Length: 166
Image 1 (spheres, one colour):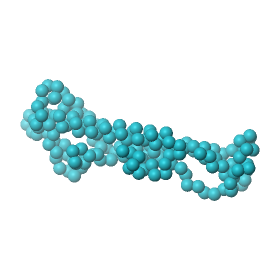
Image 2 (cartoon, helix red, strand yellow; image 1 turned 90 degrees about the horizontal axis):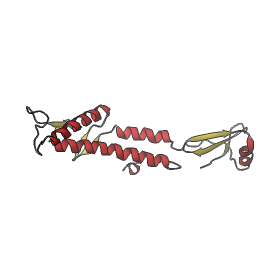
Image 3 (cartoon, one colour; image 1 turned 30 degrees about the vertical axis):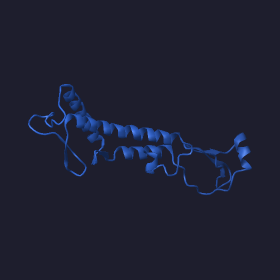
Image 4 (cartoon, one colour; image 1 turned 45 degrees about the horizontal axis):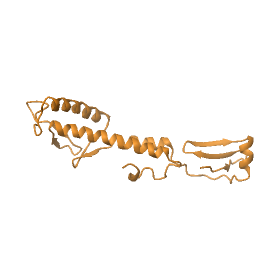
């Protein structure tokens, strides 16, 4: 999209070229061709940028996620813990851990994950592995939703709406 506007001193023209930003033109053929259509200077609301979309993606990536009806933390440290336990769960499954066995991680106590509401959700190895897959699926969904938004020109003004992130 192009929105040519004279700057306040009328010495150049500001143009919104795309989602990547503005250009200031003060000479040359493009300046000459835009002089006739440039409007008077006015403040415009900036269109959402690629950086705006990336910030929204990052905010959503750090937000809690849902697994089997409960919410769980998904910050960087939590993701490291999830990945670590998923690896152990995969090894336990390969070694023959049975569905329903909550002592696959430690024979002295049942395994569980603390949810966002601070309650413990018991998990066998298969459930723990599925839990990690769900956390990874959130990452994939959000990363590709952000890519689709960044590819739009212009990026929709309502890019933070959940409809774009499903």
